[in-house]
Image 1 (spheres, rainbow over the protein chains, first blue to last red):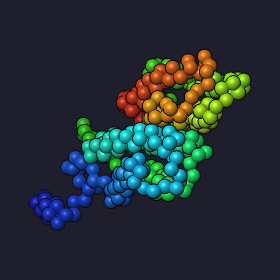
Image 2: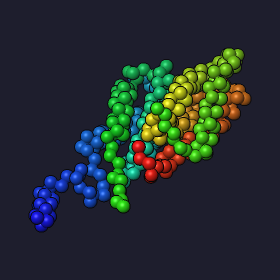
Image 3: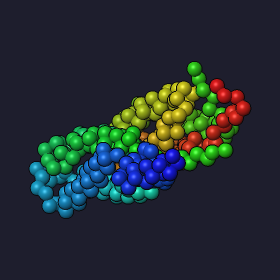
Image 4: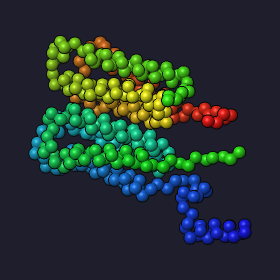
Length: 166
Length: 145
């Protein structure tokens, strides 16, 4: 009887039936495909945003209003791009080691919401949506990025807690 | 209805410092004399006051929500505190390194003292976050509910 049980377990492991939920031996957590997809979107969005900033900075994209960057907006974007890059690196490191991910995600979320509020308050007066259409598209889709961050924060699975039996 | 968070005295001390700072900031910015704004009536000061007003609304909301979260939903208090700390650090970095050429606070003794005391608020919030994340759970081993 005992041998039969062991054989069943061995067979099910070989056949791949030992799912993540039922495996007690695994020391790492496998994140869901939704998480991986959303996380990839966050990385891609942030990288394209930063690349776009450098394209705008280098005047490689034609804009309608050429004085757009002479309002102090360029220096703000520069500092924000560097900070975003640092936070994105921290987010990826914490996701890789699965340690403190929720906190780093929360920090990035606070940072993104704050920068969105700052931009809306400080630059709404002299920044029109048609000044730099490509950049405006990203500004308009920022809520999507914030929602993705929030979603990732909610669905992230922490490390399994080791429960010692007494 | 309310939970007893069982936190250290230093946590309550840090929380009272943070509250004192926020109330002082609310008082300072809501009582800026009109003539100060008219005297230095330029775009930079106007935009700064606009930004300060938005930030103070968020601060006032957080001041009201924090005790409710701490005593009623203690499980989420650490996330809320970390978010507030991150926001405080972000706006401090923003003001000093990012927006230094764009914003300009009106010349007032109270405002400059509030600005110089911001690192104390950040230190208090950091301590609160650390304690909420790492504080040992005091579980009653002998009496189960």
